[in-house]
Length: 138
Image 1 (cartoon, helix red, strand yellow):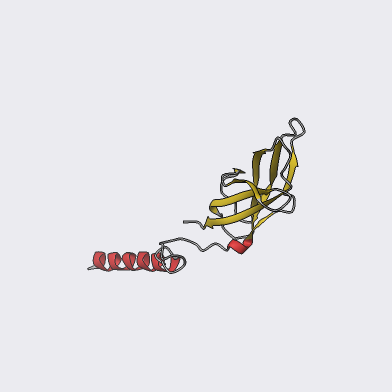
Image 2 (cartoon, rainbow, N blue to C red):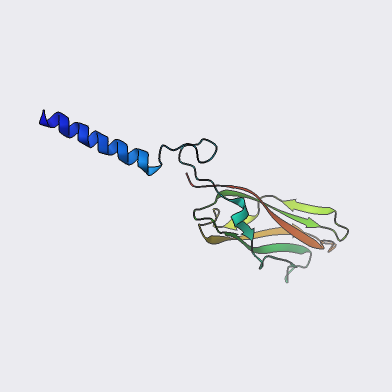
């Protein structure tokens, strides 16, 4: 009788721990178990992001800087697009796979971004960095 009572108590504590931990809560985001909702408004392009010509080869235009994550958890698999434009506003080139270090943006941290564009005629006048999406922790 004592062993049955002990098993019931241990099982009850385990059940209470699992339900109160949030592990089985599936209403946070997309009805996916354990996913945390990330605020895209809290992921921003840093003011230090610049576009310039290479000092070694001025036919290369590059965009470098950082992306800042102000969310309380890591932004996984961010999708970032860097678009360059002619002076009249039309698109010159798009890079949708810029180099990122680290690949995931840390919680309350930042990732370095870099994209290179071949521009032998020096026609790129401006650039735009857009953060399209990111996932929360699992």
